[in-house]
Amino acid sequence: MKQFLATLIAVLIGGFLALLGYDHFIVQPREAAAARVDQPQAQAQVDLTGARTDAQQVAAEVEASVQRSVNGAREAMDTQAAEMERRALISEAVSRASMFRVSLVEFYFSNGRWPRNADEAGLPTPEEARGGAVRSVELGQGGSIVVMLDDRFAKGSRIILRPRATSPHALEWDCEYRGDALLKQVLTHCKPG
Image 1 (tube, helix red, strand yellow):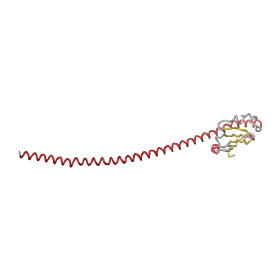
Image 2: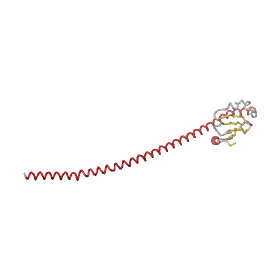
Image 3: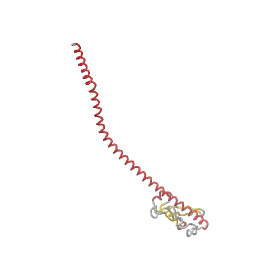
Image 4: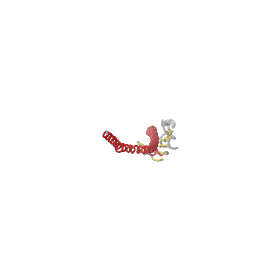
């Protein structure tokens, strides 16, 4: 029985030492590793909260910048569209004057002189020629055509076409403009008057 007791005590001491070794070499290193892993996560979470706030601020700044860019582009496009519309109105005004030119040329070559008024040449009254940006088209001295533009252009803006006889059977038209600066850009063949 002594031997049994000695074996039992040896087994118990061996089991205790095994558990102590297991705890010291296995369990404690795992817990320490888990604590090291958990601790940076908590720190990273705090950093992520700050990073989230920073990211939201950056996103707000980017959104504001994009909105400013979109608004700037919209304004530029609106300005460009308005200028294109005004250019088209100038071209239309010159086209309206073409009807007058044809009638005046026919009258000049048929009668050897310029008409005294629009009615003599069979032209509409200044108000009847109104349309688009054209306020009126008037017959001036020496067969000149004066196209008055409306308030979409600078005050007093007009296009003047003056006939010039280059030979007994040929006429050329000189162009002048007054008023709006856009007339100079569109009517590059015209001179300021």
